[in-house]
Image (cartoon, rainbow over all chains, first blue to last red; front, top):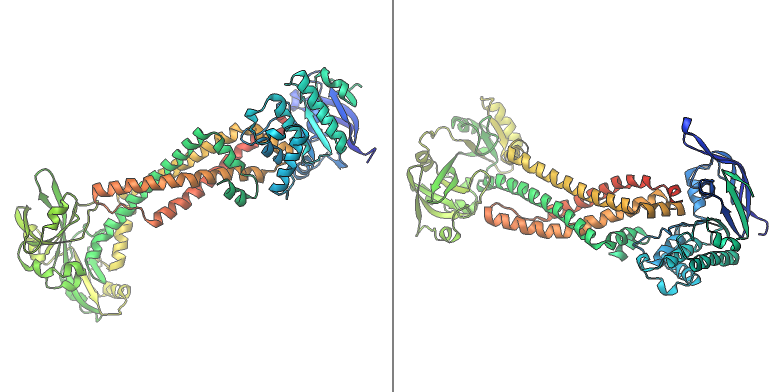
Length: 226
Length: 390
């Protein structure tokens, strides 16, 4: 599997708005993310980091250039294909976005059952195992309201990883966490990613965690500058 | 419930978990659905009672064909019919007997409150035209001023009605004449009167001196056993030379009366609208609850969308919520609806009861309309754009 390219962008451009208000957000982006490893995507606000993340995450349509995800060209891909590809990704959001009515285990099960045909008992076992990996076995039946910020983000990590995705996309996952919790979450992502050869693309402003990244991409004004 | 939904949908019952997470709101939503159910039950109950009350007097008689005036949409409406048409009807070989039926309304002044009695004048010499319970006492009507009184009449105390027997008759004044109730039968209050009174045609004519013996309100005919009432009615329409008459099978006349009450009389239309309003209230309540729930969970839905869950999953969750609301809201609605109908029935003596047909209809309607509301509410899911999460 070494050397396998999970994400490959060539001449990727993207615009927002229409007519006079049309504004280019990305300019001629070239990048390649190999399998495994943690890549930090950094840059000032408005530099286009989130746009890159949402394009790779199949959440926006590719307008110009080429973007290949796990061998699939995303430009021109239909909604059904994009949805199917998203099931093979893991997402971690800045504000964890756990479902308030579901326990930690049930939230993680949602990550496992997004692929059709996964029975409840199997999903439950996988969720329990994933929660164990993030150190939350004893909180499996807690609702999010009864978990700390760091614990919620660890549940979100478990949810992202439970389906053994090839790629995890994380958007500012440590922004709301204290230094120790932030370090724990990134270490967790890195450790589990290494164990499963998962590629992690992490958008961050958080300088406290940059030393843990295998690779850093810097985006400025819609262009990759380093 | 959770296990049942899990089996039904083949996945975690997220809709159920979502609804029950906020118990106060859940209970309020169920109360709203139950309220809509009660509205529908009461209106349906009244409509059914109107139907039963409309058809009830037809049960007092045994007839195959009825001849009425052209404007007689109901038993107690319309002009008179010349008795001569009865004689003409006998020309048909299938017609074996005929009787004039007189219909009027007589008030019984009971001091504090009058009882309005729908008075039916019959020929006591022809008990074959009377239902068995009435026919058994038909001979009593041969006495001038005698009556068989409705023991279920609204405003007539049950003990007083029970005391009326041939040995202990009860006389009262009506239309300036004395009527003597010799016995009772099971009639029942309706929308057009408090109860019924059956008298002989002669007594009827003394109570209503403006009426003439040769012009009853309706003519009832009995046919030879095995004769087709509809076919005979069709033959009589050509045989009888007055084209303005309504000559119908007796059962058809009853059903036409019912349709008239339901679709052309204000009461029927109002109660019909009542049912519609109940259904609309239910729809709006369920839609509001589901719509608010979708709006509250838009971020979670967007997260699930980002993870790869498709539109069918979200539609399933909302429909699951709609089913839960519909099913659980129905039960208290049924209980309260039955209780209110029972109370109203006791107060009005109308046949207001919860029938299995009503319960099944409202149950299926509740589930159907809840699911429809859910389907409409899923449109709000389109606002859950996962790209906005980043």
